[in-house]
Image 1 (cartoon, rainbow, N blue to C red):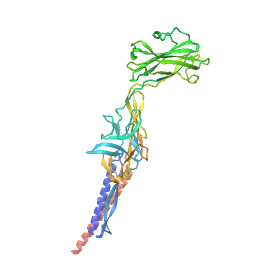
Image 2: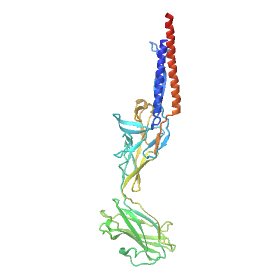
Image 3: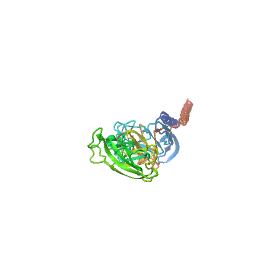
Image 4: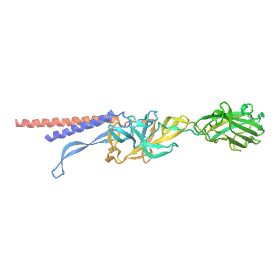
Length: 420
């Protein structure tokens, strides 16, 4: 009779522990990346002196709080550095948490760029990944993922692509005079070219008809940006000829470049591409208005980072003010043989226990690891309806065990009354 009281007490304790787990789940129903738990119980049996079980029940005891690692729903935020994992795995972060220095794991993807240019979580722990070089090639060394200090170096212009029609009925003009370029040419257009340090040079390209089916062209730039030039005085940086057949198609041409920016050690090669002779997309000479249909060049100035984005494979891509983009690094994802055995540390972080196995770290989407959704966060996987049902059953269990105690107490009272 007395043992039934103690057995019922274990039932009260178990129901209280389950209510604690349920309460923790409900409290974290809106915690990003939270994984709910459930209390697992086991029966307690008396043991004989020989080490075997006598079969006598001593109630119940908590076996473990099992972590449930099902996928949480994704919430779109529009913040590029908010990341969500779709599938198994954890983000890897490093730093100091509650006085403990080391590597931690999390499903919470609320990241931002700190003052030193590193991707960090809201507690300042640095996201781990693989860095990229200036060409955007991702390396294999795992480390702090730095993106904020990136810049885009300039690229000097090497090739100018120009497509146009030159009016076959244009009148012949006087001899070419760079000082009176407009008056001694039939048509002109402009293009911006860049030197090795990213300085922009406005180049005017003048076309002059010399005979039927024959043209010459001259590219001029302000002498202020040229070696030996004079500010306000145009200087020739390239020139050449073009020839057309009776059908107005390009048959050939010549060109020479003398482009030497100020401060450069020597001339910078500058090629003007008017198309392939006989090609359908080359510059033409038809009896129509002279007009440019397309012009571009392959150089650009220096650029500063304006935005970052992350693709499904975790590659962090930076966009720069010069219109260029480049891979800055790649986010790492860790997985475990038994992820539900990780140590819960608070702050949405987990630590490694021997039961969880060693972390296997790689790029997202490889080896069965999760892929990444940028601009989204993974919500808690707690099912509130299910938790409320479990709460009611735990409450009933507590009430039933309480009833066991009151019943056993009444029976003991009856026994005591027998003596009287």
